[in-house]
Picture 1 (tube, rainbow, N blue to C red):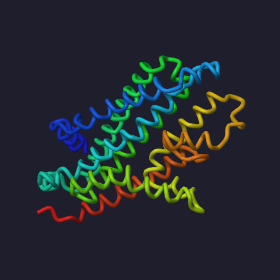
Picture 2 (picture 1 turned 135 degrees about the vertical axis):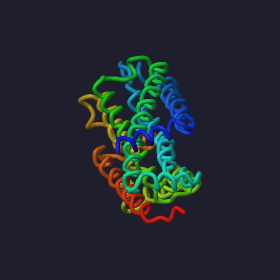
Picture 3 (picture 1 turned 30 degrees about the vertical axis):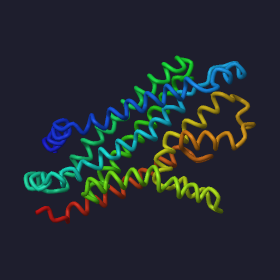
Picture 4 (picture 1 turned 90 degrees about the vertical axis):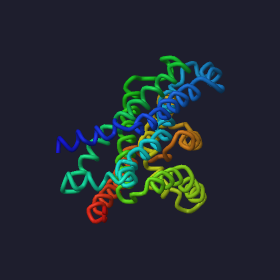
Amino acid sequence: MGALIKAEFRKIFTVNLWWALLVPVAVMSFGAGWLGSGFGTISQLEKELGQPLPLGLLTVSLSTNYSTAFAAVFGGLAVAGEHRTRSITTTYLTANPRGSVLAAKFVAYTGMGVLYGLVNLLFSSLGGLVGAGFDGFGDPGDWFAVGAAGLLAMVLWTLLGVGFGALVSSPIAVIVSLLVYKFVFEFIVTTFMTGSDAPWITAYLPGSAGNGIVGNLAVPVFISAVAGTNEPDIPREAFEVLHYVFGGTYAHPWWASALTFLGYAAVFCAAGWYVSGKRDIT
């Protein structure tokens, strides 16, 4: 297994895809951290409240929820990319059984998910530092908690992508499906469900659950840091506005979102594993 994992990392770093998708993560994360914490009416709000706003917590959530799309696509091409180049045939023939190949990919791409998560956290924090200084991060414990949730979200999105790519096997289908679902389809469904009799269902959709891993932690922590003992007096609308922008769902715990999305990732990984074992590679 160790040799297969090394081979997977060798495949990853031999081509340019890993950094071609990592660069936008760094740029987007820095921009979200900087713009989210350095502009608007923030200075005026801080004067009125008499304290700095820990907006760095929210911008980490914002950058993560967009950057995970790149991690998902990167993971999705782990298997689908080999089908495009036909190298999957050689891979399976020289590394039987097929399940060991998929297992090695899951391990290798877990590591790459951590890398993507660290880059996202680093650059969103740098952006927040430029925009608001050290005061924009609040309590270090809160920052580490939100950052850890961001790492978890990035890893799970990467693994979901690997499973989905193994299931679909077409690079174009992987890219289009992941991006359209995450940014278009679920947005439409969520908008429709918000006005229905069961708006709580949206918290259990894949995109909302993935975004909620960070958003459902960052938003309550942010409000708690700002409001302090007056948190019970904060209207629900304030939470909902922040969740709408930075991800997550009102009154839904982050760990529930993590477990929900873990379930989706596990289903796709299992389905990809099964289909890959049966698919004709000739």
